[in-house]
Amino acid sequence: MISTCNQAIINRFASLTERVDKLAEVSDQEWFAPIAEGKASIAGIIAHLAQWDRYLITTAVPDALQRQGVVFPDFDSFNAGAYAHARSGITKLQLIEQFRSTRLELCRLLESIGDELLELPITANGTALCPHTGTPYSLIYITEEFIEHDMHHQRQIGDR
Image (cartoon, rainbow, N blue to C red; front, side, top):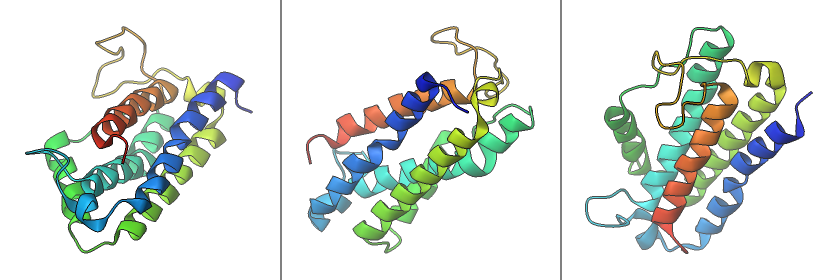
């Protein structure tokens, strides 16, 4: 069983799939063009989000559940892999579907864990408390941080 509060967080996390689905209407030229000089393309951003979701599914959540703490990889090299994937020849619709299915899989995984494990204090890169808020790390708190991450990228993409 999962609390209303935790379910609301997971629902909000899942809701980005609706916004990303609408990006299917963006032209291929806009999809693959950098959003600004020196920045990723929309395709790169969506691949980046999907790659982080996959990392949470395969590594971060299992490590947290085994009480090993979560270790996040070097961001620059990790993100470079996502951007390369976006340029690999994958189509816009394939990438949108990849993001959608991965995000929904992650949300189902989080829902299946239950409140006790979602709220279990863990470390993130060896740190027990978020340096910005002082809040203890947990899977649900990390999910909230990824919602903020999503919002940052939504602002970058804008009203496309």
